[in-house]
Length: 301
Image (cartoon, rainbow, N blue to C red; front, side, top):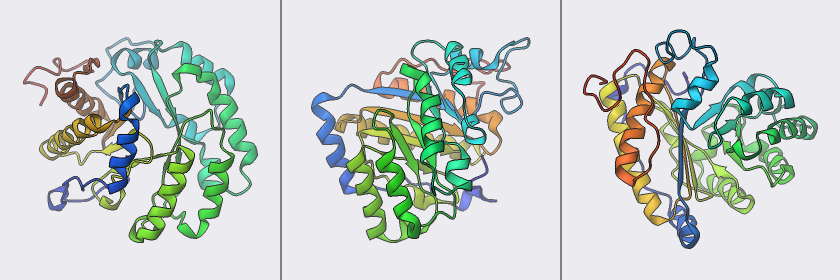
């Protein structure tokens, strides 16, 4: 993933910002009924991107991927409208506790730019409903140049989106974040409709670290700097924040690791998962690269 890539990550201040004040309120309201679950994964499962992850002779990549991770940020649905048959096929290849997080098709978000998208949204939702219990959350990523002047389009889509399908939204244009009134307006819209406000941690766009949860779910897209020391430090900081959020009432953690060189994604997912298990007592499987020692071995990093 190239979004937010910088030439020299050493000059970036990666300090996690303080939480928005509203985050504490959202989490506190969930605390009495809290039942925490964590999902960690990559964005892709294809062998071309994850070289060295699959054992030699692996016949089906998704089937093997699902033995190592409990979730996938499903970018395949961004590039083509999913079909019922395709979704059912994917579902059958994964265990009962696996979750898919399919991105809305780019026809909706990028080409039509949320104009007259009722029909393709319905088509998308009909298809992904076949994930059934394995559907984690639908994921709408807006185009980089989709600006607040088009806010009404987003309102319409959110108001018409089926309430039975959980939805997360990622806004990207800087204008959503530079004006506090605008940032508050779209966050309130998300809160009122149960929409998760996606956080993107990437080097060149620190403004997307808004730290404002609009549901008791943290959906984090972590984009590595491809610098081992820096990325481990950043992941350590995320562990501390997640421990704090869980103590306050966090219900779900959806954490997806990207790298500019995607083959590193499983390595850092393993690092994060092991740290998470130790910090909060989760029992997630620690992924293992086919050509690496287990993550607990000093030889991994």
